[in-house]
Length: 118
Image 1: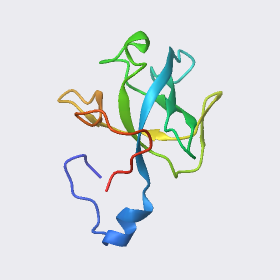
Image 2: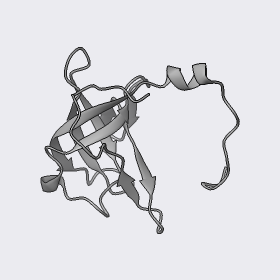
Image 3: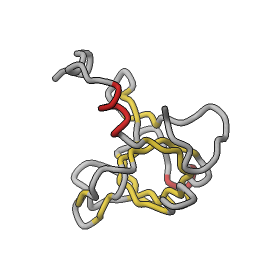
């Protein structure tokens, strides 16, 4: 499917199955072993979710040293996925800019760790 095509319709209950939460990046480091340039993240969702790891292809707009303290949105209920030698536990969300490079999605104000998107 092209990025500008609409996905197949879903019902609201399908949307509720996707658990999207706010977390704060607490660690970020380059991941040069990845097939595509990426950054390894540790994101703190607080409460019962805690800290989770993610690999994100965000090197065009972000430097690892600038990411700690930044809030992001991530899907927390996908199964872990092996990315090279790294186990990614959550899917950090972003949208492509005009050149197809990922821009992170984040709330425009600080919100509590683990807050759920609804």
